[in-house]
Length: 322
Image (cartoon, rainbow, N blue to C red; front, side, top):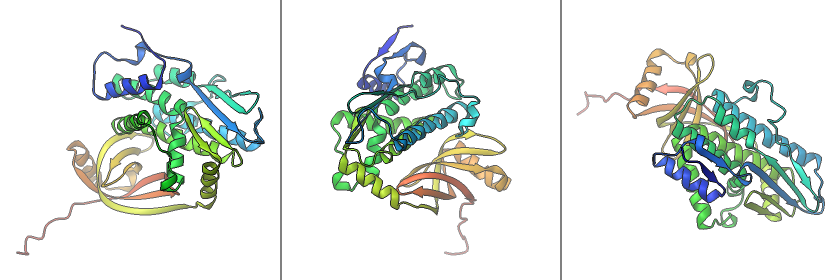
């Protein structure tokens, strides 16, 4: 088997695109990632950031690590709970090193890649390779920071991406649609970057990987985050089921696509009749739409959770009317 050494983000994007196009001859076992592609680099500049880590920043880094754990648990066990990983090995931690000058922190995520390679994933080798490469792309490149900025900053101030960034985001979106497990890592990258940005409100700049925010953008993100309060709203519309993962005690996670959104929703089978569940499974098997009532919890523009509260029977036409 030919060995493939991957050293740049452009190579990662190209390989993921080829995997999505079902090009044969690419397997995670033959791929080696460079140190740069398995290292998170965070740089913070500002009066209070000279080779030091404040308490707030330490908490932001802890939140980032928890997001990585939860995404790993979801991929390996199907449950978004780090306790499913058992006792965390000492080398399964983001060990950040601090350099002098501005605060520059680095941490290796090779243990994440190795855990994904060695773990049993309920997917074929094509999808497993996409997840492994995708994790390197979204966690170390810093694209989560751009997701945060474009969610929290006014439209005319949003980050303008160069063509290569646009290609990255297009491939990430395709991968998330094709492999539901990967969408959880995209969410982890966004949530982790948001926590770090919120932990340095007085910084002059924040860089994660290749993505950077300036002082005004950091302050805008923090100002909006303070004003946010969780909201829950119901929506009822036809959805197409594109992904499924069984969890515990009758609880499952489905990936569904509606008119203008893609959601990962929780469904507790005990809350529905057999007839309702048959409607859902029949629609999934025939790639048809099924009407669902879904409760969505949001904090600002970010979906924090969604669950199915009703499975609706299709309307029966009234044949008595002409």
